[in-house]
Image: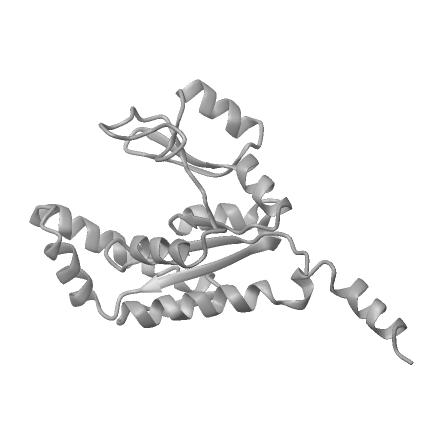
Amino acid sequence: MERTGLLIILSSPSGAGKSTLARRLMQWDDSLSFSVSATTRPPRPGELDGQHYHFTTPAEFRDQVAGDQMLEHAEVFGNLYGSPRAPVEIAMRAGRDTLFDVDWQGGQQIRASALGGHVVSIFVLPPSLPELERRLRSRGQDSDEVIVGRMAKSRAEISHWAEYDYVLVNDDLDQTEADLRAILTAERLRRDRCAGLGAFVKQLMEGQE
């Protein structure tokens, strides 16, 4: 059946496994589009425009926000970040789903946008805060001070869990991935998402003897 593409919001505190799950989900279904964010920060070594980010100037970014061309946007450490609307609408019309790796604030903005009726939002929780801290420390990337800050931010993010359609506890990565697949499959099959279903049923009934 023909359908309009979904906007899949995947959020979690840092270290809960969101990036790994997003990568696995896209390996499972290569028709998924990933929303490439726009940013005003300079490219880092190895980053490609249009692949890692859409790099733009602050003036161009603000013009896009003023023109309602961003589904969500925020300022982080003096740089602007946002999700461009146009690629998402193109994917939707083609029946392809778009995956967003955004925080709760970005999720709120997308749900409040004109495309909010097509959103499926999923929040990923760690099995415990001590386990979340252990995962952050096992990366070996951050100082104790940074980890303390990340844990404080994680508590703030987790407080918004009830705003999401689905909440998964990632204590087993394979099971959480399976749950994500099940959610996406079920949401795609919802009656109100299948645009051609009414015409099909009408044709089916008219063909009865």
